[in-house]
Image 1 (tube, one colour):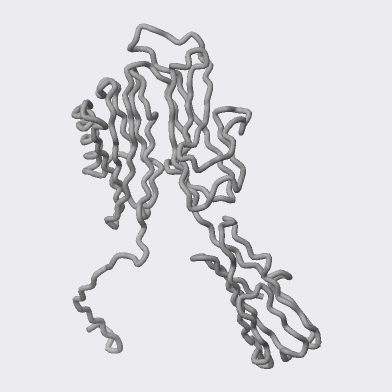
Image 2 (cartoon, helix red, strand yellow):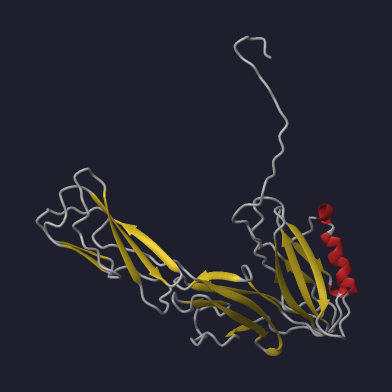
Length: 336
């Protein structure tokens, strides 16, 4: 009871459970190695900075390594990863640097990064790396891996390159000039990959060059122009996401007609930015939005891109016509 006779304050114990969200945030892990093939004198950098889906809080990063063949020993590398995973009481590091001398020459390794958000959901990515027994330039493709794009977007990939480190061998590179060649390894892309840019480090593909709901593996090989056997490569997976279809009614969102005028509502400008196989289905509806309006005299066609409205069919008033276009599992609406 409060000091005022007209007010009272009571409390009671309650127990409640905070459930998981209906649409949880799932981490999408990006794991990029400084190069797929590591020169004999080079360190290795593993970088998961492109990972998304933390939900606005700290992400937990956990690295591990498996030998790529029976001849590779990874004990030294595993110890380095365990130290990185214990950083900040187990939160871990998104980037790990592995010294050259910790890796076995000619050793093949598969690194795995598991990222877990505060909701307990995890994502995983892996990357293959081979430690060479000879010097090699360091080649990488800038950006996240996998790289997400759409069919209607231009694709621009850039290769980064560093000169071979020669500090641990008794040789040198006479000429610092490098050349680059791009490949697509799945065979799904049949266009040209040569001369897409004045700078050969760039791969530029025009919009609509890639197919929606398809993954591609683009690889760049960089080599010393005068000594092509001193080379390296990098690969990126390009995932082309499906886009929403777009419903459109020609004439704008507000139109005015006399009662004694016939008119058509035309949805033929609706389009699919993915230009995928299949046809549109069209569904029209009429809604009277004023007291004098009445849709009952209108015959609405089935699956037609055009809705004809004959003269004298509608009473004077305000109407909202809604269009639903459907193509496969995708749909969109428009109103006028």
